[in-house]
Amino acid sequence: MGHLLRGDLAQLTEIEALPLEELPDGSMRLVPADGFTIGLYHCQGELHAVEDRCTHDDGPLCEGEWDCEACEVVCPRHGSRFDLRTGAALSLPAYLPVPTFPVRVREDGMVVIDTRA
Ligand code: FES
Image 1 (cartoon, rainbow, N blue to C red):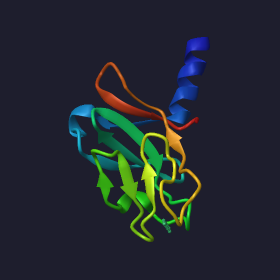
Image 2: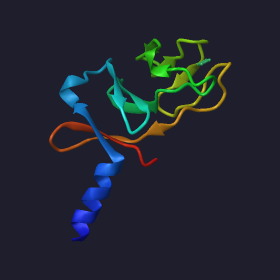
Image 3: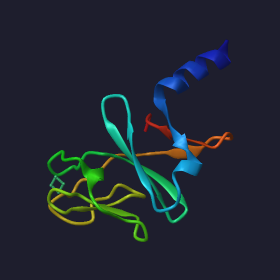
Image 4: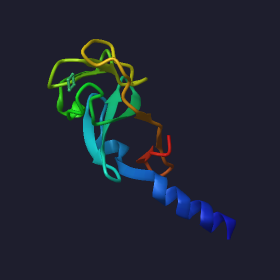
């Protein structure tokens, strides 16, 4: 019974994004979450997930250009850069970090985003 309960809770807070084989290094996807959108990035062999909402003016952050080598995304509205690993704002006008989410690859190869954070 306890296992069932944990499983139910996990379904509410984890998002199955896509199989890792469909997200090669250097690519990204927009992933719908519960009431918001997440930008999922594969850069330099690591997976990172950030909320698709710029902290400067709530613009759609992840539609902007991103630098795979630096692991940074550039807001398409006013050009603030964010570190995809930490969510930190690296240049003005934004100065607050964007939320980040833990990402893991399940045994079956599915990329899973934990939105509890
Ligand atoms: S909305 Fe992103 S920098 Fe202004």
